[in-house]
Every structure is written in structure tokens, then in C-alpha cells.
Length: 195
Ligand code: B4P
Image (cartoon, rainbow, N blue to C red; front, top):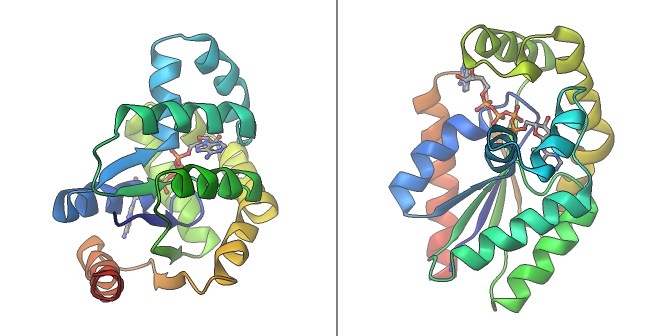
């Protein structure tokens, strides 16, 4: 199995690049943001709880997200690998992911960390808000709260993986195709080590 984490602040291009990478490498896409939005659209109890946090730009509680990821794993027992997009976002989530992967006799091969300036993040998310219908993208105060939440709770997750020498920084500004090429270069190099 080959598992990678696409890491970075909100608006750094995780969702955009994930779509291309899963197609190229045949990985299963696990986006906790997408899973939570599906729960909201289906008006489940989990979705209603998650919405109250997402609308304020806050992270959804760990136990909610970890339970949801566990169920997703159970539905994809034959996956040849996973691309984790927007997960893990806290050290508790990273530890839970390690346990799930160890249970499957596998681990994270690489964490690709997209680097984008705060002003560019805000510009992109406000831009997406014009068409996405996502309530968390239309309000600049909420967008800035998401970035603060990232700095306070999520940035440290990279340090967790750095101790295992798994993190590679990728410049995340420029054309989508150029960024994709940098990501693929790192993935190919790591895959040749795993093989
Ligand atoms: P997510 O759905 O994960 O989304 P995101 O961080 O907002 O954005 P992403 O990084 O994927 O977007 P992209 O840059 O591709 O999270 C939403 C919310 O869900 C969180 O705030 C949180 O509340 C909750 N949540 C999710 N996972 C959680 C977890 N594990 N724990 C707790 N809570 C969780 O796209 C942004 C825009 O940039 C797009 O318009 C795109 O077209 C544009 N763009 C992309 N690449 C570009 C480029 N190179 N140049 C110019 N524009 C570009």
C-alpha cells in the first residue's frame, strides 16, 4: 500500500491537486472536508453537529472526525493506497491514523506540505466562495478564523511527521500544472524507495 498526506492550510490547493493525483496513482481519496459536507447535505446528526463548527471556521471535534474516518476505511478494504486530504488536522487525529494504518500493516509514505502565503489563501477562498455555495468561503472573518485554527492546531501535525523524516515542502503558488509536477516528482521518488 502507498499512503500519502496532502497537507497545507485552507485554500492551499489540497482538494484541487487531490483530484488529479488520485486519478494518476489510483489511490482512494479520503477528504474529511468532503465527507463532512456530505453528512451536512444528508442532514445527518453528525452533519448538523459538524456544521455548527465549520460555519465558524473551527475544526470539528476529533472524536467525530476519527469515527467517520474509521467507517470510511471499513468501506475500502481493498484499496491499494489512500490519499489523505485535510486529515489529520490535529496530533490526536495523526495518532489515530497511525493506529488505523498499523492495524492494516501499513503506514504513511510521505507528507507533502503545500506552502502558500496567507494573502493568497484568502484571495483564493473568497474567489471560490463566489461560486461554490460553501458558507465557510464567503465571509473573510470566517476564512481568517480557519487560518488561525490551522496555525494553532494543525501546523504542529507537520512536526509530528518530521520526526519520522516524512515531510516534504512543496511550493504551492503558481500554475496548478506546475504544482502538480512538483508533487508527482516527490511521490515518484518516494514510491521508488517503497517498491
Ligand atoms: P476542507 O474541505 O478540507 O477544505 P479547505 O481546507 O478549505 O480547502 P482546500 O485546501 O482543499 O481547497 P483548495 O485549496 O483545493 O475543510 C473545510 C472545513 O471542514 C474545515 O475548515 C473544518 O471546519 C472541517 N474539517 C475538514 N477536515 C477536518 C478534520 N480532519 N478535522 C476537523 N475539522 C475538519 O481550493 C481553494 C481554492 O483555491 C479553489 O477555488 C481552487 O480553485 C483555488 N486554487 C487551487 N490551486 C490554485 C492555484 N495553484 N492557483 C490559484 N488558485 C488555486
